[in-house]
Image (cartoon, rainbow over all chains, first blue to last red; front, side):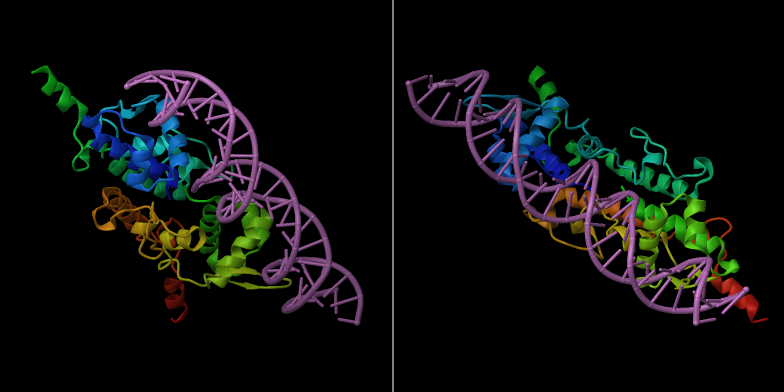
Length: 149
Length: 149
DNA sequence: TAATTTGTCTACTTCTTCTATAGAGATTCT
DNA sequence: AGAATCTCTATAGAAGAAGTAGACAAATTA
């Protein structure tokens, strides 16, 4: 199960992606539109800012924007940033690998082999689905190219 | 991520399946073989007994056995019994379905559609892998048939 | 029947994570 | 100066994860 936090992050980023041409978007607007507790969303956005996924401006007319290209920001990426590994057990995670303490022999552990398949199937889906793949989300590059005309 | 409890349950059941022809198996033997904290394993086995997956006998020469046929007990089944849903979000779970509180429209929620694919991929693997599919595990039916000769 | 060997049951603990909330502070614009 | 925003720090309640302790009940066997 992914956490609510991860789901909120995803919804917020998707909202930002959809509204991208509008420039800065208020926290409170995202919170209201996606029904996310405002203060909780604040904390999430700060995290995403540290990860350099979004950017913000303070003061009047301030707000948030995406900095990452939605065509290159995958859902898997977002979930990992918030929740950590997508893998069902640490010992099959690529980025968060950790040995099982109780495992007698990792190389022959059949549970591990099975879980590896689950990990791969999950990542195949989430790491190849980008924010831009959701309807009404335009990739930044497309706009940038348009601007250069 | 599945819990340690679920992993322990899986390992214990697999051990029981492999030792099935030996009759009753001690908690402490399983705990030692699979490096599971003994008291924790006790609690897990009680759960599995309530679920009628295993059976036990007290007193001297007591212990545990599998009652379910390893050829019909899937890994998905075991994990669900211990951890609950395999789905990444409740709203795509079949057996543990629950509406997201913040979701505006479930029918068009694109995150949900994506998560449904993840759920299906995960269940496709875990619900079609049975304890008997692990090496050295013999299905009970095979033994039962043999006994009838 | 008493001792021993098992599983059973109840209760508790400790730690961490999840899901927030409150409120003062900093920044920007008008 | 004043209003609108984001920011930072602190706190907190609930739940769950992972385990531990110890008395109790049942079966065997000497």
